[in-house]
Image 1 (cartoon, rainbow, N blue to C red):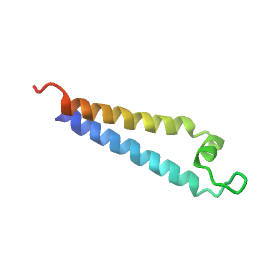
Image 2 (image 1 turned 60 degrees about the horizontal axis):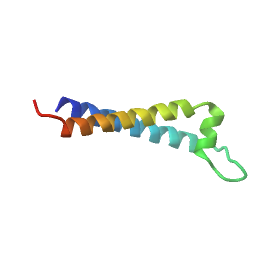
Image 3 (image 1 turned 120 degrees about the horizontal axis):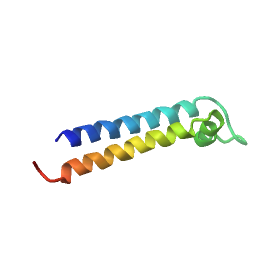
Image 4 (image 1 turned 45 degrees about the vertical axis):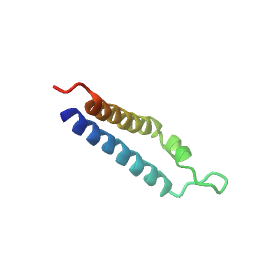
Amino acid sequence: MKKTILGSVMFLTGLLSTAVLLAGTMSSGLSVNGQFSAFWTMSQYGLMPVFYTFIGIAALGLGLAVWGIFGKKE
């Protein structure tokens, strides 16, 4: 049960952090040929490692939650 709760919180944290990061880069007003690109803006500011870290936290949390649900009961 503890693994499931921890995994769910980590998954939610990763998703919310990613959403805030994507929303923040889209609000900066930078564009490429008139097209807005969150990934281009993140790469210009050097935020791609942070984005990948947040995605990794979400994936790790999802894996931990699934492991907690389907793991052997104690």
